[in-house]
Amino acid sequence: MALKTEHMVLNMGPQHPSTHGVLRLELELEGELIKKVVPHIGYLHRCFEKHAEAMQYNQIIPYTDRMDYLASMYNNFGYVIAVEKLLGIEVPERVQYIRVIMGELQRIASHLVALGTYGLDIGAFTPFLYLFRDREKILTLFEMTCGARLLYNYMWVGGLSHDIHPDFQRMTKEFVNYFKPTIVELDNLLSYNKIFIERTANIGILPIDTAINYGVTGPMLRGSGIKFDLRKDDPYSIYDRFDFDIPVGKGIYGTVGDCWDRYYVRVREMEQSLRIIEQAIDNIPEGDVQSAIPKRIKPPKGTVYTRVENPRGELGYFIISDGNTNPFRVKVRAPSFVNLEVMGELCKGHLVADVIAILGSVDIVLGEVDR
Amino acid sequence: MKNAEEIFDLLKKEFSDSIFSLDKDTPTEPIISVDPLLVHKISGFVRDNEELKFDSLMCLSGVDDANGSKVKDADGLESIQGGTLSVYYHLYSVSLKHKITIRTATPREEPKVESVENVWKCADWHEREAYDMYGIIFLNHPDLKRILMPYDWEAGYPLRKDYKNPEFYQGMKVPY
Image (tube, rainbow over all chains, first blue to last red; front, side, top):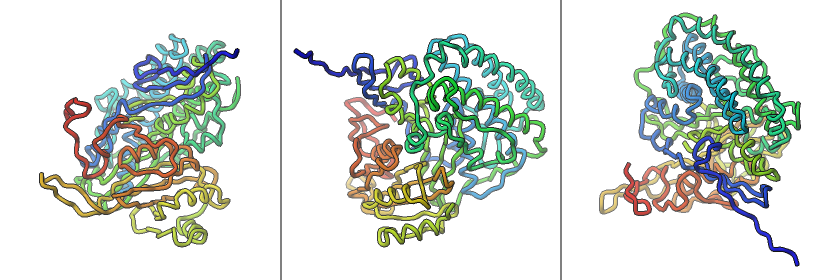
């Protein structure tokens, strides 16, 4: 007589140490095997878009900080670019340079958290401490510039809230010199670690066509082996002036598009960010960072969709203006929101323990998923 | 790479009456307006056509156009009647590197738009969000339920311009 079997449903989260926030994954299991993963989100929903409709354009910037709180600078960046496009204002060179430097520093800081917590999820505790030590140095640079360590409200429409500190350039160069060897250290400690490779190589493989159809962007898409980076493919600000490469997944230890590739793309991206910073830091032109800030922001009627390469992927702002001082509609296309959707596809046929490895490699920030 | 006029002409040739207009007056982006009940077919066409190849949906947004008439009820609460809700599709072609925005408007009282979930998978959550926030019904969507709000939220659709915050949710006072 055949035994009757049925699938078990297991809830992972909303409070679970390795979900990086309040995310609930509903797992359908056959023994240890994953049959289905359904993510449930919305636990951190704060109605950003509703708030935005009730506020003036410049008052929205602090709210954008709180979406992807690990990459606040870049959220500011995307938003101010959208509003500037709507207003049609030119931003001074000095502001552009400082924005790019801050954006790239933020990318490194954000990747450091992503990589550190990824190691932590999988059981490597030491790299986490090393990486947070280095992130601290970036946060010090930010703190020196605008007084805040996490939520900056630094980039304003048409300018910046503060000019850089006289020591900023020197300290940033010191940081770049300090940080280069620590990437090698990270490689030796985690990237080429046998246990880490065993846990991540050949796990959660994302083929290119699936990735594009699911709208996946950022390091996840590049991990699948396609050279697509908005800084090169749809340049904004002054990124077209800098010389840098786009690292892609090559499947060195497994198949192209596995968790290790996604991890490794982030590591290599930090090097490229350092390259951009090195090229920009000595060429900051003189000028006033607040000269182009409009007294009153009242864009003409129209719509705009701009996108920037956030550390997690394509961050899009869709703004409709009806000619008032408040936007008529602000929609945020959050990279984590879209990237998380592919979880169900990635987890199929893997084991429960692999869900943690896959989720970590997607690198979500729930503040941005739920907005 | 094609510009908005060429894309519009191509669509007009294929679908004639269900492609309404090309709006170029907006300061930044040209928008093609289409029939809400033919969106699925049009999407399939723009994805598979050799000259267009829109293989990626960047963003899908619901919008309350608030172009109906404002009506005040006995308590002085304003609500909007008539008019339309819109859905904007921002498309991009990774291989050909061109973009286009497609817009479709649907009556506010019975907002129905065809789902494009099986054309671009990422539309799944975006459409659920538009349903959650505006109450736009996406026909043939496999699992149309709320996504950001609680599943048992009964007080309507928060991003509509005439939304009223309820006093209580499940017997708890809503503080804000």
